Amino acid sequence: MNNQKTIREVIDSRLASLTLDDEFSRPTINTAVKPGLMRRPLGIAAAVCLCIALALPVMAATIPSFNRLVSLVSPQIAQKLQPIELVSVSNGIKMEVVAAMNDDDTAVVYLTMQDLTGNRIDESMNLLGGFSISGANMLTSEIVDFDAKTKTATLRLMGSGGDKLEGQKVTVRVNSFMSGKHVYREVDPGVDLTALLQDPETTALAMNNSPGGGGELYPSGDGARWTVSLPQAPETTVFDMNNSPGGGGELYPILREQGTIEVLKKDALRIPLPGINFAEISNIGRVDGRLHVQVRWSRDGVENHGYLYLTDATGNIIYPSNVSLNHKVEGTSKYEENIFELDKMDLARFKLKGFFVAYDRQIEGNWQTTFKIEAVTKAQEAACNIEAGSMKITRVAISPLGITVMGSGKPHGADTSDNLAIAAIMTDGSRVDDFNTTNTLNENGKITIKYMPGSPLDVKNVGAVDINGTTIDFKQ
Image 1: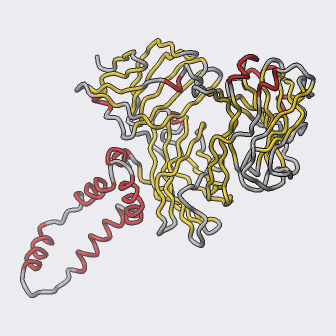
Image 2 (image 1 turned 120 degrees about the vertical axis):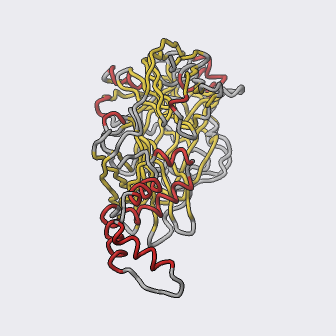
Image 3 (image 1 turned 90 degrees about the vertical axis):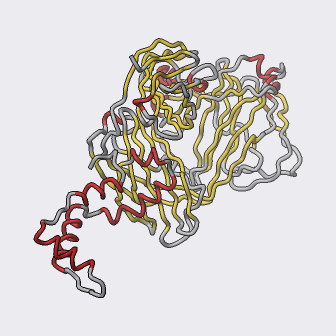
């Protein structure tokens, strides 16, 4: 089926192909217009119904779910969607892949999750790493809608690698999800980073008052202040990066290439994070000129998560690179080394803070469906040469799903693609700049960033793309 057609168009085209010759049509019409007659031309009706059934065997099933999705997205998006309508039930929860669309580099799948037996799904539902799209990488997911009456969440899944998926069978799997979300912003452990600049061999590190907490990681105390000894030369151990299951940030590829790195000794400190009962700072110190902050996470069956960052009085933020120190998960804890590339004298300007998300429950199951996905349309490409901080942009592509920027270097940072100003300039002079979703793929220094607009682009009416004030023409 042509994936650019809506359900209505498909039905109309199929019905238009059904014809009756004069021998049957005249008696039928003449009988139908005579008042008072209630005759049923059963043979003809049965034949017509049979033809429709043979032509559209699953159409009746697809209309309700697809039409609801159409009501949630823009008409332009609906026109590009390929109806799928495949169902998988596990653990009393129904997953239904409703529709999909794909271009040269991005695959998008819309699905619903409905709790048939309880109230385990809510508006905070999050798949996190509990899903996959075969053949795609750099996966993201977001909730589009939640219907409390039917206990149904509608989600959009997106992954890079669309050119490898065109015309191929794709399997969408969901293994787990979480719900019952709680967000903790600007969590302040009260760490005075200037203590790292002082001369004594050890210094007192004061903690802010905590509003409370609990769980295995939360220390007992008098509820007022905690002080811990902070060594100027923290004890470290050698860690083999081949034993790390993962990490992230600009430093991570460099650390991987080193092979072994110095990390802080585990559990040398116990610094609580106010209000957080599933994580604590287990050590902190300067190693090889960088600030290291080690975090111990409890494993309680729920994938609670978060991150640390540094911020100053003017709002500047520094995010760390991080390395997971658990090759195999043992016991009830896991460790993460956060590494900040920060000049020693800047420590006095910054405060350590955190952002954390906790969930009440994690639900596991085995939901999966397989279907064939077709591209919306081929993307148009143009060459360019744009320096954007530490990233060099060499090609730009446009498709109904958005604008794709391709190049090399580093994709993140205050001076790179995080702050790219992207706009599509239409042939009538108007601009489209409501790109509210991005997806970044970094493979061996080659960067691909997808910017998706609120509504699909009308590619034939795109005259140029503007990137940080540089115009790339698409119309000759």
